[in-house]
Length: 359
Image (cartoon, rainbow, N blue to C red):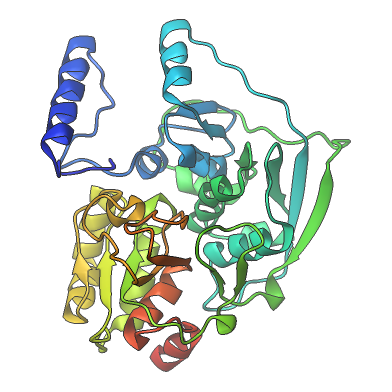
């Protein structure tokens, strides 16, 4: 999923080895080019994971499936080999922090903003689990939940989970035939901390370059920083709703002459739906480049490498030095709405000004 279609001979060789392995072992759940996507997105949209399961995958953003009430965590190559050979692995049992979401998020505020606000206030979550609850959950769309769970890797949380409520049940309808039993915390569960998050007062947030914990701020604090590239995509924010939001903001407008807007759907299914709904046409008419579904520019390998001295605003997952290309570039993280608005302005900007104008 990180290199599709193959951008190098080495990748092409690796892809063919994977296809040979699939044929040899009769693996059914194989999503080759033409039916592909970022693995975390494919797991969600195909119902390959369900509530109450433990999910292991060789990528740090496996925590995305915490939105499905899964104990989902990325593991390294050696751990995955051990699981394949023995069917077993181990996890450290860590204390849990419970986040109680209250109120209602305003237009222009998304799951990415909720996460960035939490990361800015509370910082690193190494050797901790995150659990989300509270009265606002009933109004929090599944895509926002998936974004929050995915981004938990950026604060080093062990697990990040949501309950299997009606939103989860509605999302899974028609996606999975697996039986599942939701897991809930005991009424007398002990938490390392319980933290209330007031969504009513939340505004669009951005992460400054190089790291996320204790390095985020409301978008107004970095407004006006010029950006040469704006990227919408990744397992965190390459979903259909992200493309819809971006298309809504850029409709009838043009991307700034000094900025490149690159949009990469998280899966082939997302791409096809976005074409059918006209989002891709709207984005291209505005001057964006819409690529095939893959990880793409997120990890600085192909289809959007950032050059020395450039600034990039991205709705992807990670922004450490050199993540998206040159170590002399700077990467800011925001919601897909913030990215689209910044692409129009040519600098980091609050997306609400464009959403209001579109209303």
